[in-house]
Image (tube, rainbow, N blue to C red; front, side):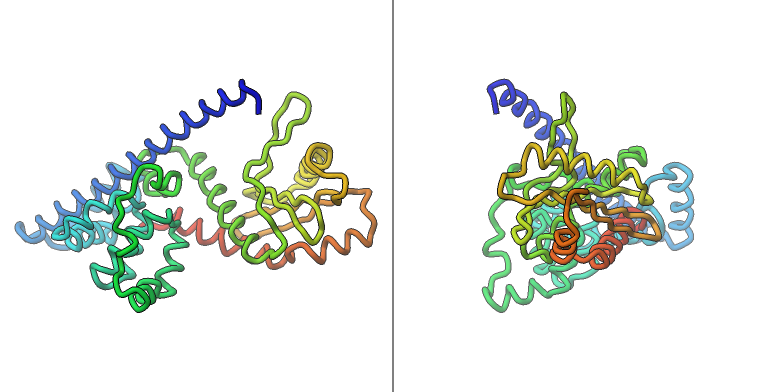
Length: 337
């Protein structure tokens, strides 16, 4: 990297820092809103004899005034009330709540029992930057109880204050934040794709024993233009680069041509002399169907094609996992808690 590019890297760092600060601030405001709303409802129900009929009228009012904002249905309003009432007397925990997404707050609220267990998972989310799926897996595995049995003190290693450098960034920008900001659907779809890519990367590393992760949005240059590959790995068994591209929507034949273009660029710029030609995997996530296609060099012999097909992750397995991840992400995007 030359001196000029180092200067450009500083600009990227500047942008990312401000962007992360913005994500954090939006999340803080959103959680504070739900806290204040929960407090308001709690006090009205306790002091003013508000009942279900008034809450239903409030739901209708919110639908009229903020039709695109999620979470203000009957169930969501009572959840905000529960959120406030659960933590209002615990000053330590209440200061941590704005540091994790609302989706994670809801999961902890509904899936844990004691306040100690809740605090444990809140701190784990902050420390490890958990997605909703990762948090769900930890709770389902009974991590808190196993930790208690092994260590005896749940929060011993988690009491350290979390600094900005440890703070989650884009993981905080869940669908509630997007609705709160009234951002267009186009932004949500971009976020949807990023979520699927992240989870597919974790799955590939978990199931593909010979895969080594190289990068996300990996840049290749052709002429004066830059192109970006969603995920790039190296496969030791095949001695080649493996490019993954995710498309939201139906499979189109032109995706193969585009992948061939990427593979040619990789072979020219990145492939070492002793390595085999690069291979591509195209993942298409549509509402009712997931399609996985391989892209390989036309000069490859049938024997080599068979070997590649054998060593790569099975298409059906990838399709099933893509379907599972897409469903989870879509549920998080569409559900109203």
